Image 1: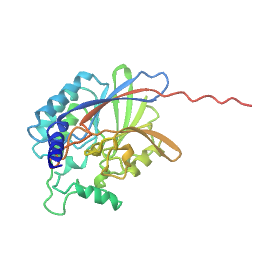
Image 2: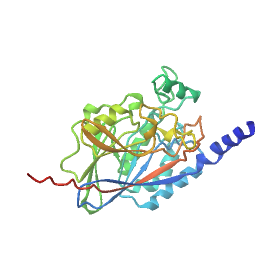
Image 3: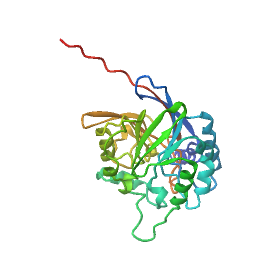
Image 4: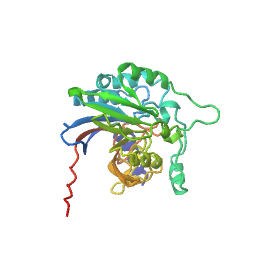
Length: 307
């Protein structure tokens, strides 16, 4: 049994954590008559100095030629990681893009027992690994990351709305929140639903907490993009994730699903991300990923005739 356990750890830490994948998803959310849009979502990079394979893989994603890029946060896991994040994302910064930040963009991760996530789940609580301690917090240089993204033309969505102008005159409106995991979200600042004068609108947040999903869905956003969960990170084969590190159910820990609130329905895509906390550099049955979402026309609702 000891040998089996050692082999599992070696696989999780030595192979799967570097086995980067591209997930492809089709989402029928666009208005009738609109051409498909290709959206590249990157999330939870958690860059640590020296991760060359991750950097090269992220750079290669520019070959997909997306219409735009959405970064759903937690780029950092090392205060010295900003230059390497910008190097990794450099080719993608040439495309229209938008971003939100996660807790690890603001604060460095803390060493903690991974088993605490299971205990917190059993108690109805959720791990707050990104919360800074009262004293001794490691502050990441997130303003450097923000300034570089802004200078490249990406749109910041920190409790804010923004617009992307795409080829062909298409205008996409985005509404974003700061990280709910550390209670920085301020929905009242962006409430009101999608923009009426845009071709399409979507919502963006780092951590998919239910209060945020409910608000976006009730406000009529057809699509919500999020990250944070790492897909469970350590999953059980043929069973799935044990935790989500938020109050989202494990059934929707990664990939495309739906969410209902206020009598409405939205598509939700949660990225499993492509990195890990620097103190738990392992993945099992949950390889690192980015996602290419192809947005297509939604099905037209049948017209009800009069009787």
